[in-house]
Image 1 (cartoon, one colour):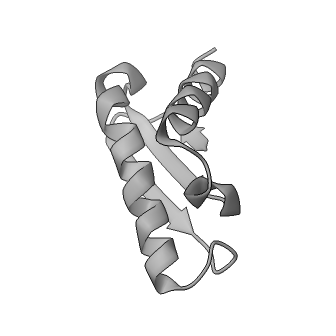
Image 2: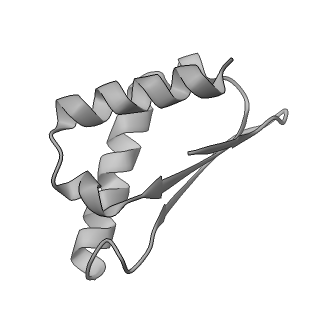
Length: 77
């Protein structure tokens, strides 16, 4: 996850070929989008870039949500 302060709120979702074939890459981006949706108001304005790693398809949604919240709190310091 990367963050750059700006007046606009924009998101980018990236998944490389390391994640898997095109079906797995698309699914990983969908998972990222579903993780971001509940936190949009908490995030504030700026450019947000989320990068899917290989583990995203193997982890539970609950663990991903906890990790995402932890990363978001780290960046908001």
